[in-house]
Image (cartoon, rainbow, N blue to C red; front, top):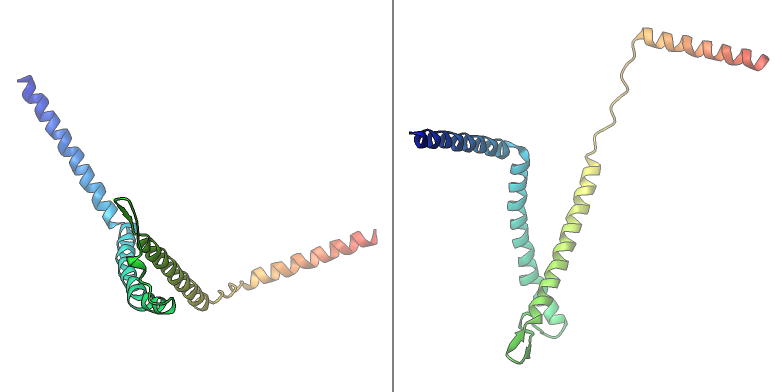
Length: 152
């Protein structure tokens, strides 16, 4: 009988923890951070495909023609039984550099666009006539005080 009560309490605790975890997960998903991250990953993946296509289909054939038709991906060295495909490494380094240049260029472009779209400075708030009058009185009193100090 005591075991049944302990098992029942244990089940209730597990259910409460599960409900709490589900509630926390719902809050996490509803936050903008998770959505921003998801959008960033999806756009980053699509951008990666575009850059890979530029590298593989446009730039590497041009680079290959310029350097005499060498295909980097086929470059390798055989040492004993092991084959070191250093051409793939060279290809990946070139891919990385091109991706870095593309991201740099896009970042600079977006920076320039953001500068152009900057908000116009907000006009100074209009002061009430009483405030203007009090400021003028303050300035006059300050000037008189300075005149007295100069005389002494």
